[in-house]
Length: 214
Image (cartoon, rainbow, N blue to C red; front, top):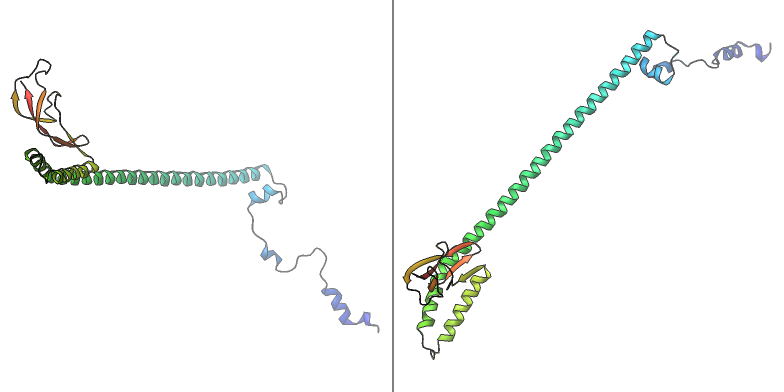
């Protein structure tokens, strides 16, 4: 008996797989697909009209679902964007309000300090007017007065002496009236300034005390 006729050789021939045959267990790895997907890529056999309508309806439902999801996402995006814009606007308004309040507080501090220093300036002016021209202390008093006025000017405070200007009750305080010394001096104009006025921008710290022409 030859080796070809042995039972072992026959069993090996029967064990060889048939070409094109599917190995056991391969079907378990295949992914299940919907009839719509199979019909779309052409991997399924031709289908009749009713089945095509069903598959087309399934595809339309899937597309409509995707569109609804996109619309919902866009709506959420717009809502978050509007919320971010409102938050940014609120923060900008808050920042501006805090800046205005800080500037107002600083201005109130400057005005309060100026009101405390103005009487000292008035006393220095009286001392200069009453001192003799040869007084050795006169130059020192003038220097102190000049430095104090310069310090106020650096904070934005300025003095004004409205001689010859029309009387304005918002800027001036009339302490007396006097006859007009000449026809050129109109009635109601400022003839003399007893105390100069002081202001910070448009805010009057102290009105000028004046004599008004009758």
